[in-house]
Image (cartoon, rainbow, N blue to C red):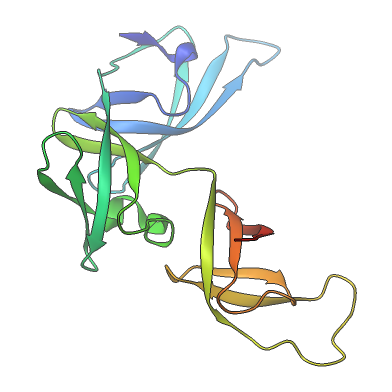
Length: 187
């Protein structure tokens, strides 16, 4: 058991027999009354998001999780297919559980995953990833307004707004939380 006030982002909880991961936490200490926390919890199995409000002294059932390395192989449109780097077993994870991750997963890359029993609760994506620009609009001659931008598409299908000097085939670094261009990467 864990006190609601100790729950942080990433904490795994068992609610109504189903595992949920805390994706947002807000601690509220009103002038009158006792402190409470507002939690946004996501079910990795279904993608369902719950909003819970608990007094900070209430107990919640936390679960023991384990982090393991998994290698991304491919997706078939419905599931991500990974391979355990320890046992070499393949496992499928529903894409609906991690809808935006298809743009950040690169074939052959190893990611850290959080497991509860044999179920994947979370996949840890780096906060910054380098992508190759697969498609880029041509910059229009004379379009030199300060801060002029255009959209490009990366090799994973992610559309990113970048400065107009970025060309097809170049590498760019992208913030995975905001999906924003950070910098051009040489080499």
